[in-house]
Length: 315
Image (cartoon, rainbow, N blue to C red; front, side, top):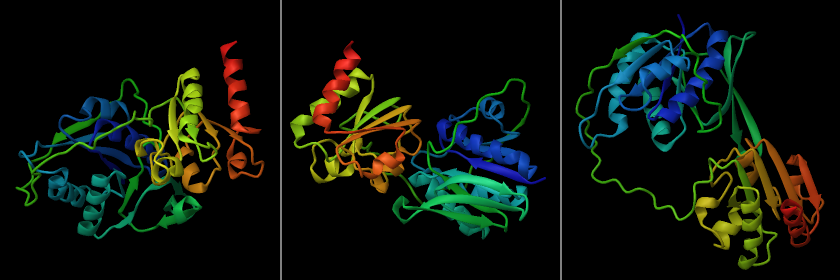
């Protein structure tokens, strides 16, 4: 029977990748296998969220990286012959996926935002952003297996279902790794994590000076949201921390409401808000590209419009 595997390092990755796997499994007539380290997603929750089998990776020796599991994963993949193996497109996920593809002689497609099975050709069809997000590249994979990485938060996590049954198997410990982690340094964050924010007010280059960003922050507070920014505001002007930069070179967000203030709407930025449910824009340039991508737009000077919105919210 064909198989779809998900190889996840964390609980969140497992839930998201199982969401993608479950959407493909019926068309492929495939069983779903989750490969997870002990201590991340439990076998029970993986089965409830769509796994038919869970392969639990053994604990690593102190200082060994996640990639040390590769020989064991490769051996299981050769025995199980999955048609499709999904990884999260994190730095470690992309590295491990590439190494597994090389070992198996499999095709690799990175950062796929959409996957579907084409019954006519019998191929897996994948979409990924190209040219800095200006175009969507469509790829077909007629050969098997194919290894695919999926950007975090680009697919909905699988919802748990009651009564699902599945198998669990403990995998053996891998051989000692030649690579050792000698030190871990968490990246210092100077701003809030906005990737989980339900509302984001984004400050663009339409603001005249740093002090005026208080207007955007006030609107974000009034809406119960967080403040984000475009790349010129963070990386060129340094008015806000780079952690708040949204876009291709920043973070990807999926708020219920995104409000762009003085944001032109360049594709490199809008790529980061593709998952927003509602997009609103305030810009005095009626030809700004953001209006073509917005659900609601106000053509006007943000210095006139935002105080009126705040006044209306206070009523």
